[in-house]
Image (cartoon, rainbow, N blue to C red; front, side, top):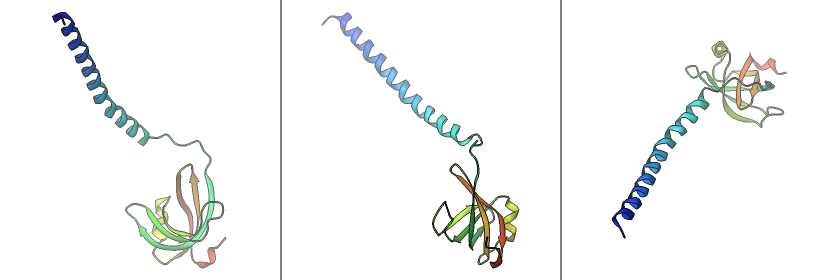
Length: 126
């Protein structure tokens, strides 16, 4: 093998190594850009669906604006269970405490959901 041929082979190997290094350094950057780009999602144009909920408050988390509710079957959406729901508007949290029976509206838009229009007391079943 000639010196020139050996030099050409080394040059090709070095070029491939540089390309591999560039690709392996670029892929994590692209992945992070995709992840952080998805965090700033635009508001959905999908319609908001509404479902009636009746249940008992199990826990209120004022700092995270969540309420855990042991609810009956939500017709057209899900079976009976205990589940945490975000509360909107946040002022609705002020009237909630564990053990209170409530009726509310569950708002669903795509994969986002929250409760609002909360009525307290056993006589608020609709």
